[in-house]
Image (cartoon, rainbow, N blue to C red):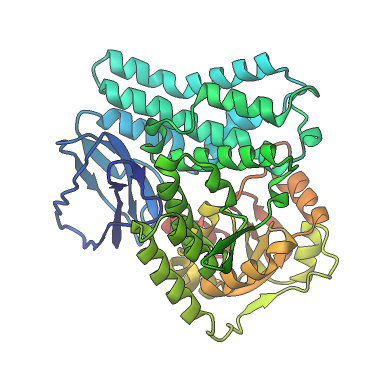
Length: 466
């Protein structure tokens, strides 16, 4: 199996999608992996794509033992043994945030979104209560001398970054009039000010946190929208640069990062571009790289980005996979029953996803471990994307890139509304989501195991289709 270590870059910024160590690990083999930590910070280890977050300080010694069961790691923390001064706190953080599904850990924020007409003081009070709910257990561990003070402080910053990033998303994606949990007199400028009061985005301590980049990016996006009087992030336009009498276009995805302070701008753009070019390859253009070089000549990230850009373009000419079928978007498929009827007589494993959803993309690599079981049990894969139609080309490229044999469609608004009602009910629309349907059109499981669960999903499928 593959072990990847994602280290801090120069002790300042978490190097989001750039593995600095990648090791093939065989069973029953002990490895000693030296990692130089220049400052107290979080970093990430992944085992075949399953992440685990670790906190380390200079001169720390951490002993990490993981037992892998079956073909892929199980998605829980029972297989991990960790020792060190902050071991209990590290395990608690991974349990609180990371397992079993990161998105499910934001329930208190989603519950806040269900309220109506909160004024600014009450909104801030609610956010502080939510943050304290996550961080309070670490105060107890600290007073019991089971974690260090620096770890407790870092955890406070980490959770604020995670929760504030999730909180800001509706204000980025929706018009202010469409956000019903706030009172009518609250503006996006008010929300920006409150975010700054709860967690200053350009505090160097935020940039050291493994998940701080997301909060900074969301904050900058909202700030850019507010300054330019834009309603949603869909209104953000590309930016034009004149460099040596040549005109270059900076993609709208990265434009808000230009508002970052100079001391973190290069690292922020670099991290953001590396994440983008791995998850959404076509989102980074040659023009983007030229502008990035103009802003920060010969910076650390450019060589990595240029190599990845060249690789992606050599892959562009690969023949399409005949086993990947895209449903004509003009077809009126307005409900899950329409989809089941369209696949009458077929067993289905349904994957609800989107190209912009990082956990969804991560799961796509795991189909290689279950495809043989799906084939043996005559189960067809059906991929329902909730992307906007403006992202059509990226949707098609992603399906081909990951060789996602099966049927694909982009859900229209009616289908999304029907999925919300039939699949999620009053709960938040969380993705990825997996559904099992038998050949008679009966839904057997509305919340099936993920592809990355490996043996768990295989056992579930064998139980249904003996």
